[in-house]
Length: 247
Image 1 (cartoon, rainbow, N blue to C red):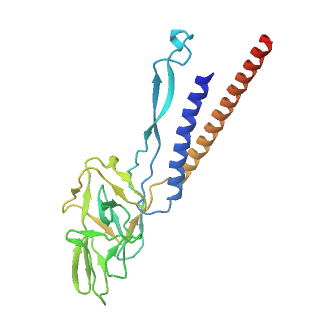
Image 2 (spheres, helix red, strand yellow):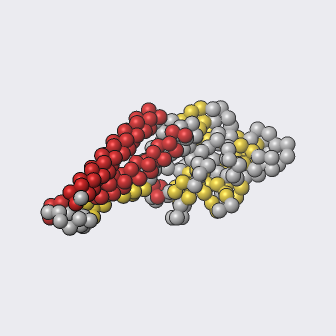
Image 3 (cartoon, rainbow, N blue to C red):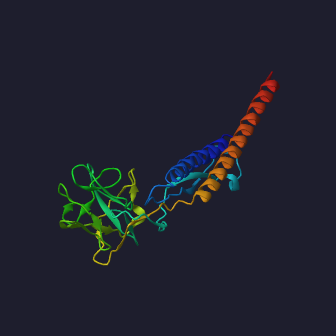
């Protein structure tokens, strides 16, 4: 009976983790460049059960183990905005962003110019060009980004956006504000990397699918809770009857 409770608890912990992942996906449905994640789990088989009186075929216990949250790298829909500082990334490229913790990477191409004249993300982090942060001088106008990543104004070329890719992009870890970190070094995308100016890549979250998953998780969680409650009730009855027999 203890085994049933432990197995049920392991599944509830896994479902709670999946619920967190779904909630984060739904919250970022409208975040440009966001990549959805899913929850993955493995079966962990205990070599023996806690009760040694079981028959041999019943001695293996199967638990649920968190395997991680793999990222969905499918391309989001490209939406036209007409903003000359918006860019939609094509393929497996990422922009490089400067943060206090070092270089980070993003697919969010909705850019702007801050009060210091730097090209930054919506969250205010400087976007790096091939020569470092891209800077505009006072009074410059007509800032725009070309398809090859070149950034210019009425005063001429101001830099070129640095684009990178990764041998294993699924190993990227999320760091909030739509940024990714990588333990492996980034690889320059090369001259073939192209952008779509005046557009952004929308989130690849499928809201209907996520809401369906949410309902399934809630039902599974409730079903396991009911099973554990019944197991606990059976144990209480067994203890009561044993006490009555001894009395």
